[in-house]
Amino acid sequence: QVQLVESGGGLVQAGGSLRLSCAASGGIFSFYGMGWFRRAPGKEREFVAAINWDGRKTSYADSVKGRFTISRDNAKNTVSLQMNSVKPEDTANYYCAADRLRQRDYASQIPSEYDFWGQGTQVTVSS
Image 1 (cartoon, rainbow, N blue to C red):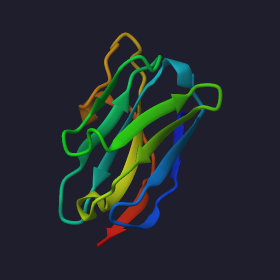
Image 2 (image 1 turned 90 degrees about the vertical axis):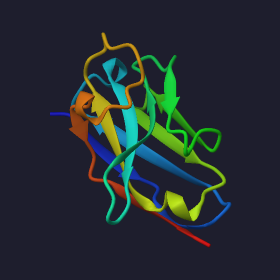
Image 3 (image 1 turned 45 degrees about the vertical axis):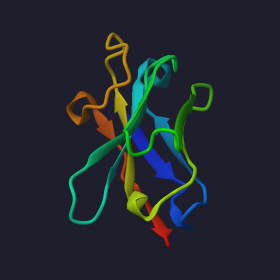
Image 4 (image 1 turned 120 degrees about the vertical axis):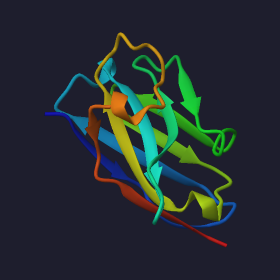
């Protein structure tokens, strides 16, 4: 089945940058919408960013818009999250997710519309 593996997390100082990657296998990656979500300690999972199947549409949470950028490389079966000007509030475990429904041509912000999830990668922002 579809497997997703995140990487690139770590410790970074506030104002710095970090780039997360998600490698997909076991499916037709170019047909999938992809998203990034995060969960901080004691909080519920929240939407971060998403990109539709052909990369023509993206969406972002208000809290990260203008600072984070999502992109995909279908030739490499990867999706990335470029995190700039990071804040302590960005500290969380970050998960990538895949949406199999290509007919849903938007970049979904809804967790229930995603079918597969990675194990997460930790991002810690110090002040």
